[in-house]
Image (tube, rainbow, N blue to C red; front, top):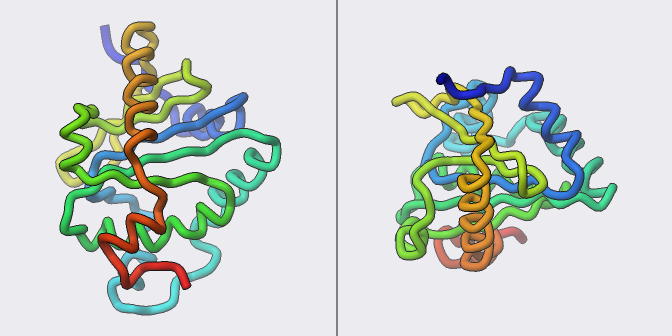
Length: 182
């Protein structure tokens, strides 16, 4: 039986239709997403970013968090940080200002608490979407997982990751002082 995969529209609706919580565990050191190519290039060149980049995402975060919903994310990162991880650490400041709570965990710490080696979104503790990527770090598909035992395991991993992760500013202070907020 093939996995149940979401269309792009179905996946996007999850970010507006959830009732209470949206949680993401990110375990990759790079994501190859076309929309980030230019902002990433500008970051590496030390140029100012286009302020409209990511505005739709941030507007949705503001809308759902204004309704009392939680948008949370834990990023597992290798040390030293890759250029892409440094870019993400810089770029997420706008998402945090919009209402998303983004925390960080070193890869060594994540391995010590036996977190999975795959990305996922968990909506309302019951809708699990496993993320799949190709060898070049491009998103392939979003697989809906319906097995109750697997969903419970991912809830456990969410709770453990959240417990050990640190806020973005604390992580930046220790691992990339140049990206601390003023």
